[in-house]
Length: 294
Image 1 (cartoon, one colour):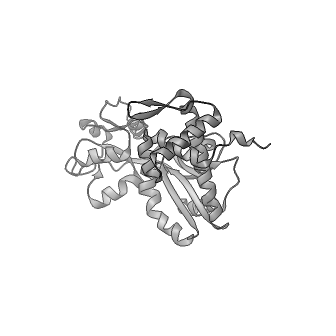
Image 2 (image 1 turned 180 degrees about the vertical axis):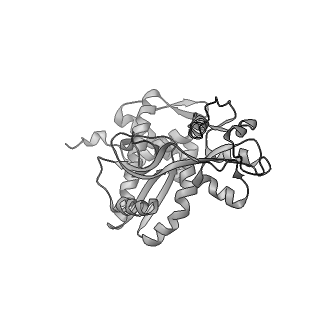
Image 3 (image 1 turned 60 degrees about the vertical axis):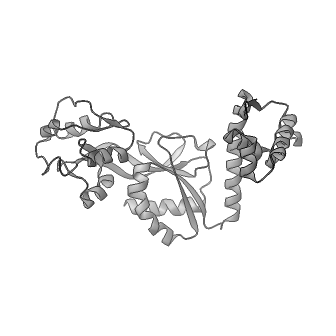
């Protein structure tokens, strides 16, 4: 069913509205879009007149969104993103194209990034764009074609390709422990560093070693990278994925606090939406990634 034209604002008006909403100023939006401030103001007035809703209110020298403007902006931004992606897809080869991939920072930096040169060499027709996301999201309202997921197969309405389980090992600054400890109980003599997304990480590792003892609290970090830096500076022992710790161990910035490793609570997956047609770029990337994981 076609939409009446009176409900279809011009793209230039929507772009102007998005810029003003994001920057909070018609002057800044005009500079970004290479327009005059009066041109931006006309676009906004035309848009509000067309839809019959007040979208912006003046606050001092700036502009802010009304409640209806905030709701409208969320949809407008998604529409502009999809329109831009559709344009990119239309311009690319039917055999290649662009793949927008959401990645987890640690896995993306230490496992995926070192391998991407091989994919680029084998598939020069595909451009891979990477953006960081720390938690699952709704593919229906995002521009992503696929994502790297950690955990279990609990993300709804997606297909899965299992890549590898997460194996973790205790590491620390070489000055903290001269040789890897043979008795896991000896690790309790040092500060243990924790990750907020793996609150029972140390308890699981100790349990795998046969140690049934409460793990004391310690410093908590939101990412492996910051926890690794704390360990490098001698602030305690970090429990890191082996693929993440390997470069630091090779360079000598970190050393093993124990020779023992154990599997974490989940695995890494490539996931992609079930309700979309699989584009050639995704198919090529998935096949290559499966070979890398093997």
